[in-house]
Image (cartoon, rainbow, N blue to C red; front, side, top):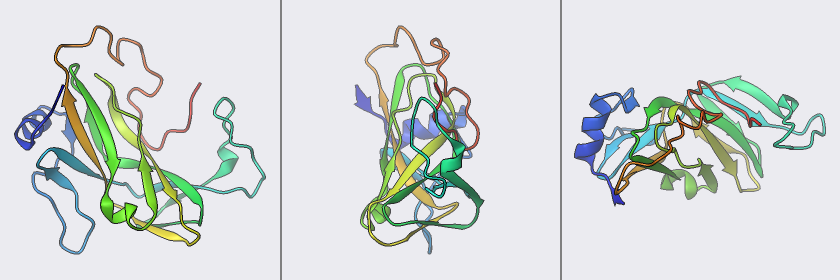
Length: 183
């Protein structure tokens, strides 16, 4: 399995793997995003679901309550101390059948105590990516919409997989917007 370069990512983006696609890293006064040497830095949209415990809800992945979140559309999201938000990428991804995509948070946010978590994007998965952003600090933290949040790394398999995410009718296929846990 090999990590794919900027040349390959650009070629695949021209075929619809990443939409919209930024050819060059953008960073004048913002947190950078766009094509890098061996990855693609995505942006976080302006749609945020901020975790709150106003109703004393229990977080249960089998019976998830939307009462645990407050929804905001904003240019700057304030994440409460020791809490998290769900957000989504600006970009839509369409993963090739022989590729696995791994996401890592950007160092700018990591150095501020913010952790970005995304499970791998499996072969033939497509949609907007739901991002989990955790504030591990005892202070409120800012996240800037339409700026860089995480880097996606593309790994091409030695052979095409036997069963893809699309073949399995994965429950998060073609997601749009922030997507909550599904059973």
